[in-house]
Image (cartoon, rainbow, N blue to C red; front, side):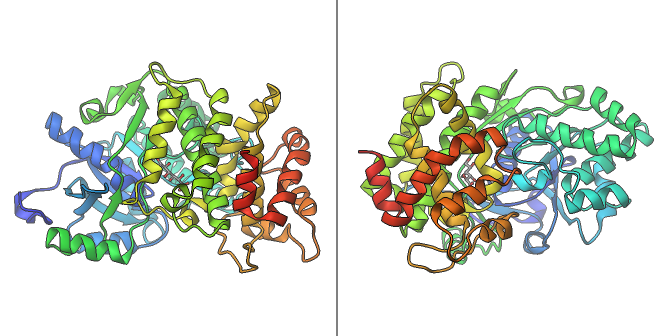
Length: 475
Ligand code: CS2
C-alpha cells in the first residue's frame, strides 16, 4: 500500500476488546503496534478505545484522522513509517467520566491496559502501596465519578460486579517493578475502603499480570510532524516516533485466558516476569536516569549526545559494572551483551531522546531504577561510586538550578518539596540531608546508609561539575 493514512472505506474499525488508560506516545508506539500485529496474525479483532486522563490534545488530533496515525521506526539509515489502525475512539476522562466507565463496563472489553506513568498509581514510591492522602484518592473515595486511573478501575469493576459481568484483566504497562502487583495492591486497597465485598471479588476473580515493556519513544516534535508529512505525503497531526527495538514480556495470566495473540506479534508470554523487569528497570531505566541527570547538568540535550561524549560513555559502562551484580538475568540472557545492546540503542543519533524528558518525575522513578540496586550493593558490601553520583546528580537537578546558575524546569509531583530542600545558603550536605529525609522516597534505613556516600558525591559534584565528577569517579 502507498504510504499515508489509508482511506476509511478501505479499513473499517476493529471491534473493541481493550480499553487503554493513559494514551500517550509510548503506548501508541508500542502496545498498539503489538495489538495490530496480533490482529493481523490471528484475524481476531482486539480494537482499542483509548482514554486520556487529562488533556484533549491527542483525541482532538486523532479524531480528525479517524483515529489512525503513523508510527515511525527510526534508525540511522532506515526510517520506516507505518499506519496503525487499532484505535476505535479516544475519550477524555475529565470531559465525560461516565462515558469512560460505560466502555470499561462493556462485556466485550476483556482487558484494561494502562500507561499512566509512575505517578498515576497514586502510590507511595518507597513502599509501593496506595497513598490514601493523595488528593485524587481522596476524591475518588468520596465521589461517584472518579478522576484517577485507579478510581476508574475500581469504579468500573464495581459496576461490572453489580451487573454480573466478569472482571477485565488489568494490564499495567508502566515501568514499575512488579507493576501488576502494584496495581492490584492499590486497586484492592481502594476497593476495600469502598466495599470489602468488592475487594474480595476482585481479589478472587480479577487478574493483574505483570509485564516488562521496552521501546524508546522520544516525544514527538513539530519537526517530526513535518518530517512525517514529507516522508508519507500525508499530514498526520499526531505521529509517534520510536526506535526499531521493542520487547514485551507478559505474565500469561488473563481472565478466562482471553487476550490477543500477542506471542504471534513477538511478545514473550512467560510465567514470571520478575527477572525481565529487574534487568530492564535497573540496567536500562537506571542508566537512563543516571545519564539524564548527569548529562543534563553537563549541558547535553539528548542521550545520544551524552553517550557520544567519551566521559559519559565510560561512565555508562562503569554504571553497568555496578548494576550487573545486582541483577539475576532471565534465562539465556547474558547481561554484558544486554549492556552492549543498550549502549548501541542509546548511541543511535536517529533517536533524539531528550535528557530533560527522562529527567521528569525522578522522585517516582528513583526507587526502582537506582535505589533498589544501591540497597543490594550496600548489603553485599559492593562499592557503587557511580550510582552515588547519579543520586547526587538527581538531587542537584531537582533542587532546581543548573551548573551555570540557570533555573531548571523540574517536572515532578514532589517538585516543590525538592526545590524547597535547597535554601539559598544551604551547602550540598544540607541539601542531601533534606532530600534524604523525604520518606516518600527513602526509608529510614536507606537514608542512613546513603547519607555519607551521597554527601561526598554531592560535594564533588557541586564543586567540580557533573562532567568532571563523572570522569573522576571512573578513574
Ligand atoms: C525513560 C523510559 O523517560 C524515561 O524515564 O527511561 O521512558 C525509557 O525510554 C523506556 O522505559 C524504554 O523502554
